[in-house]
Length: 230
Image (cartoon, rainbow, N blue to C red):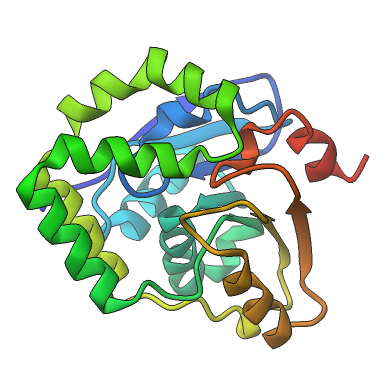
């Protein structure tokens, strides 16, 4: 387990900070194409269990009164961990491509496949992430794929799955926050039916649906427009 989470701050000339939290087997670089009207704060290295306290330290050091959280996939659960402990520091929260829960049998299967051949499993996983996003996958292969094979150790990936094994998405208590959820109908990693179950728990939930995207709707050319409701 890592000793702490390391953060990168990108001053983009805006007033509000947005904490970008990546999904399993990804890092901050997956958000490079994302263009939103915030300064970005994102983990360069993530400790799943100490993230909330590590983020608090950075927020206090920078003298920030409120932050916005953008949690994608596993990053959504990490964002909710912070919100649970430090709710007064959160202005708004965006959850992208999350599952209701990850079945234990699926987690065990993933662990076995990773231990058998990590790179082969990751190759298939990444392809499934980008279903319906051919151009985005081309960018990912060129810019990040080889690096990800090297950067993510087997132990780190397994630790992430262990973290997910104890998580379940229940947002009924977060109705008072500025909360938006984004999901794609073609998502092979977080099935669309999962988020429809969540929607039933909180009918007033703001749910933005992408018809022709995969697990990474924030790379969709219309994401900014949908984000701001333009």
